Length: 428
Image 1 (tube, rainbow, N blue to C red):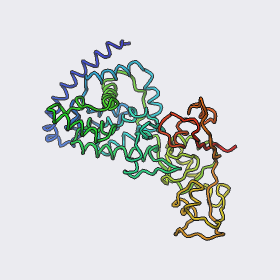
Image 2: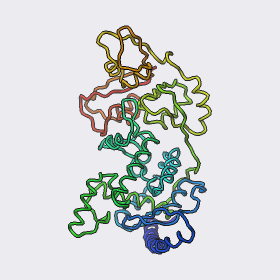
Image 3: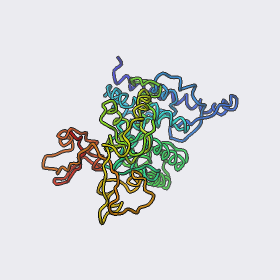
Image 4: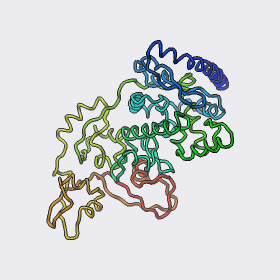
């Protein structure tokens, strides 16, 4: 087994060789495309500026998704100290990729396919590794959430639904769509420079634009590595480059993920509440956008499903509870009620309440009966005490820290004594 210094030396040697080869290939690519009429794809130079080269040969035929990515990597290798430090970090944590591959297993084929459909650099498929270690429920202190760490502002701008029942930033399909839309916009905004675009994804386009302009006015290089950016962002792009180079040059193992679809989507009737059938408990892990699973309210009319469970779901869905049933309750309208008052009392939107009851207007009358969902959760309020932490509270109530954060819109793990937390506990 190679020792770490020798691995890094190999990395540097391969980097130098690869840089020379890429330069020669880039010069020849225009003529190759004219002769072979091959559709071009993007290649990243050491400064992050987009050039073109022919598409790789049949990456979809690889048996492993990591190798499918590896075959298409086009970002130029780098020997910058920030990149090498991250390479060294990966090499010091040889089991890290085991965890990553386990988490990414159900997700990566879908992400890679969506990136290929758009003709974007395949390296973007590794951004969830850099952002969240492929954790779909991750929160940050900047109020970003989900696999791609989308902020509420960006998410809502691109049409993601965020409500007390559903947060599309934690949904694989919604979040991937928006992240790739946003990255496409940033690529155009920064004149085809992917390093600048990725940096702007992390810290905001305004900061990157100001850093570029400041360097330009000072007669300095506007290369990413020359920009004065926040510390996190200065290391963000190098982390991505390091990960791609580790995969490209095979400096450490990436446990195989089968290059076949692992998930599919199935239709979901509006306002569905699943029963407690154990066979569907695994759906919570793939549909983390639903804050109060198994109440599937407020989100898209679809579920993400392991592909081998789709037929079972089809059979099960035929017998889903319909309104009214023991999973729905009736409510009699009283004096002073309005749809907005009732909706707020039951943590619903007016739109949902109207949908449940097939109402065409906001007018209701005293004595009218409405149907409302009966949730399988017990609403509980917990007051933070001295010595409490999210981990301790989560352990006490047998829930996850991520769910506590999701239920209470917490972007930080810091708690204040006296703060009230809302928990939705499984009814006995």
